[in-house]
Image (cartoon, rainbow, N blue to C red; front, side):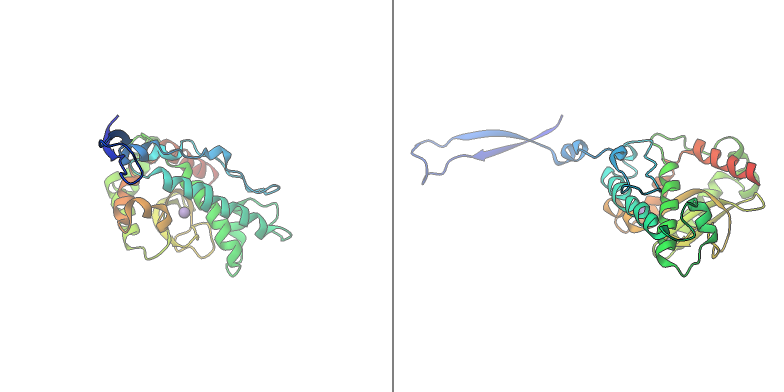
Length: 256
Ligand code: MN3
């Protein structure tokens, strides 16, 4: 462990009767070490309000496990504050309405877009569930199985897919998301949405079922990357769980 050595002068002549100067050596941890040892909460401890039916689904990793690509503090705030708020507000928004008891996917497909509270919180809840579920520390770096074959045949190559996602993210203005979706005809497409909208909603430019989501809101990256959104999107490719994304791909294909 690296330590920076600090010499503190412990002599205040006007308070001390000692005649000689006394140097006391104190070791304090390097700031980098403090950062790495920062104690994060446990995602499993994050619970929705009592009675709320839209649960927190947990994470397959600790908040700090995605570093250095996404820092632990960002992950903790994102999951335990932002996502929790969407879950709780979604429950409140559907209470006593015709949407009570419906899955979030059904709500998204049937909702009135003029209902801003429902739109933002149903979208926020669904989008973050997908986003957190497709991240993985030490992930395999390339698509696998059926999805890998589909990417090659439909998009051209994985490089081309990365390029499409990066370009879509870079040119997206303001808060929103970039997606890889399976359209209703089974084909793959890259698309973006504003705010917490998503490709299941009636207003989507490209409709489909998302299998990969990247959060483009500043809260997803600003602590570590500040204004460098493109660096954050590039980094995400190191922690995508392609096994999980392939599972989602097959689930959608099987329902078509
Ligand atoms: Mn977010």
